[in-house]
Length: 371
Image (cartoon, rainbow, N blue to C red; front, top):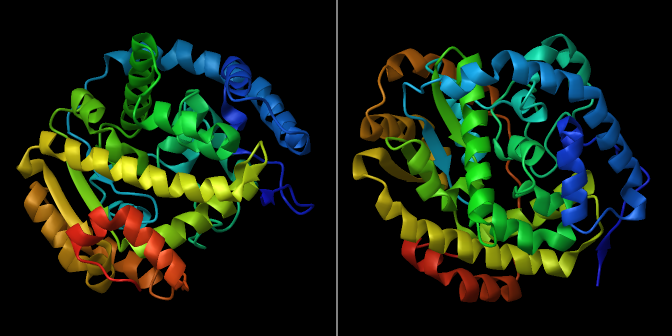
């Protein structure tokens, strides 16, 4: 069975460097330790954890009570959909609307102390790759990002830990997305952590309406509605055959950057197949909890073909105001991205058969054919 081993060109920088030392030790112990060839990454995280500790303590002392007491005035707009379904594209496009704030990459790096490190932001940005490894999308430290990266720093339960500790990916997936295997206290702690993180971002953005994007949220709808009863949801879906190919590529490429354990590529393929089934079945069951006025669904292919008309559809259905004020910046974003080329995939009959067999429930529902 193939292994993803560390290469001589890989970097030791790791996004968990802002994690508290206590959480870091707990994370390593509960996920089966770190493989020898990733000890340099572990050392980087450990040193970062120690270095950022005073800032976390000071931030808590200065802001914690204010954030806990803060009342969110506007319901978040939450983009959901399986990984590689176009959530990032939609997030960046809608994020051009000045009415919104969002979780930025910077926020996820130091989720419980980022305002205290503003003076170091430019320096820390030097450690980031220029583009994302899975799709060559440009990386911007203040650009929209999924909060799951920040959750991974704050909590021992995050889908991103499936990528950090691939041998324990099954347990991490079940606990972090479906909350299977968590005690009531652990669930309450996770919910409290998430609420505090979201309030921190809104508080630091002077109360703007929060625009979120996290594929893991596709199966967390009950918890999100418990926190934000009037939240508005946008579900985006894409041809499952392409989602399969793109997700496999993403998992393998990201592991090269994030893994702290060796990964079995055969296991990754099994996880991608099974996780899609669980995530989408949970979504179909949970979506009935969302009032129709707060839910809109679009196809990725329609978004790419005519993004402005899809944005107009979203704003009209969800009752979002002032689109005219946002359209100029959205069109500028589309002009900047006009030269971007999506990945081209080859798919053989064996993969077509496997995807159709395992994911036929969405292929038939949405009416897709093999690419």
